[in-house]
Image (cartoon, rainbow, N blue to C red; front, side, top):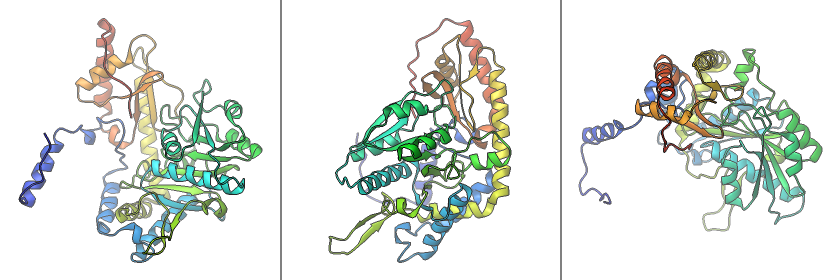
Length: 415
């Protein structure tokens, strides 16, 4: 039955009570039972991000140029700091967006516009060549712009295959894509190989670092084995990196970066054929919450390099222990060799989705892969709180599945 618009307003306390009552049916993410969506860098990081967000709760980032110069300055500061972190050369440019999908859509649009201009083909359709592990946001972007996406198989190590890319490339290719890391397996694609291909074929290479952009650099500083993936690799044209993932900033906040101003010149939208004059934005959205900008600026200032290294060390230490303890459970193995905090595990002897069913019954939200069938988690410190309980429940679930005949499961992998 359709909910009717209320005839009369309610008291503040009653509205808040209703909200809290609705939340009682949500999954218990605070205690680590959700495998993605929420990222935790510690209570102090949450507090500074929240406080900064609400300091700019009413301001609109759309009005940064005309009404809220503080918001524009913070946005410029965030992208400058991000470019410093990601090896941006002199002349590199960046923009804030509301999320990874918007960053990717903007990068695809920019590459398309750049290709049309540089090739003098204003009606060029074009195609993208990506690995099968690339995020669906590239397909969403292509669908919006009537582009073609060519997905290629990955290598045995689950990383993008430059040779398969080369086979798929033709005269209409406008972009190739590498992930740092890919979402399904948590591995960083061989960006240096893809960059060599991009330079040789004079193509735009986008690195989707929405997951890894604000953790991989700090992991590398901690001497972790992190393959080169950013603008220090010649041939990388653009990058996307989410602030609200492992930047631990309030949602919604992401960034998209370009190697030089010529590329970035094709990013924005401008229109003046209406009575109100020129309308110009650097995002798909018009109105954007200034709180997301302020929150990102504040978290960067609060943590700095040393703070991010500290949090990254905690996250990666937890991930190491997680992988070790999962691998110690008889019948389970880690899928591939994850570089960061995305980890999937499977079994060669029993149906891992049956294990997921048991975990679901105990209140866990099971992240799943369909190729191969696996249990999947993108972890931060929020999952660390529940490690002992999780391992105990996985161990019990595996024992139950091994002891009982296989049952049909209606679970399906979904984001």
